[in-house]
Image 1 (cartoon, rainbow, N blue to C red):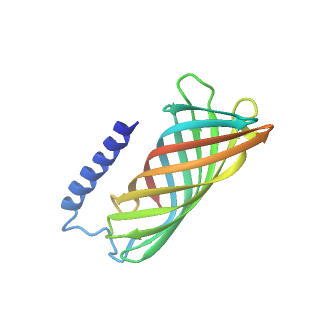
Image 2 (tube, rainbow, N blue to C red; image 1 turned 45 degrees about the vertical axis):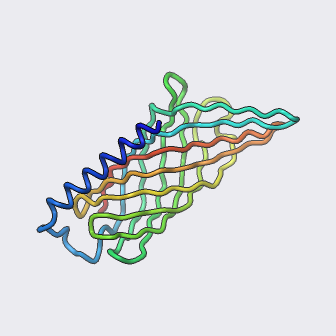
Image 3 (cartoon, helix red, strand yellow; image 1 turned 90 degrees about the vertical axis):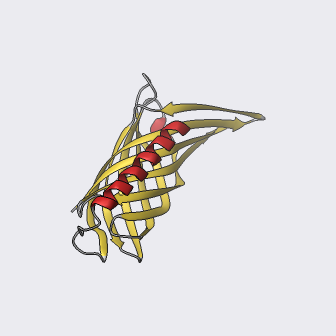
Length: 193
């Protein structure tokens, strides 16, 4: 898992570095705005899922890589250059571990953002997530609060890449308390219109 995260960060850094050099004489259109408008994204989550069971003096946990996953989101973004900006998104991720049944995870998030240049930005904020589909009682878990942070590279006025890290939580109490956490890297391709 750590290797995947380091590889994703290295690819993003190299891509942003070479892109910034290629764009040194070309402007995206308006140096005061990095990106603004409705945004659609497809993303590859590299999450680890953890389930903790506790109660009646018993406590145990289990972790699994959710490596067969894909997600998409829609939202709005306002990233002025060298000023505070924001994003808001609603996303859905189909989470799956190897041959297990998939579970649909819905997430709404809001972020504060800062665009250092018209190409490079940083975002961070809070999310609320809940299972919206899956086997058994998956949808009976309560929504929980989480957070995310990401580094964005704006390739053109309308298209960009984000590499980030997210943590999402859900819980359920039925005699025992069950806490579910998904955490890990996300790599996204964004279109802003």
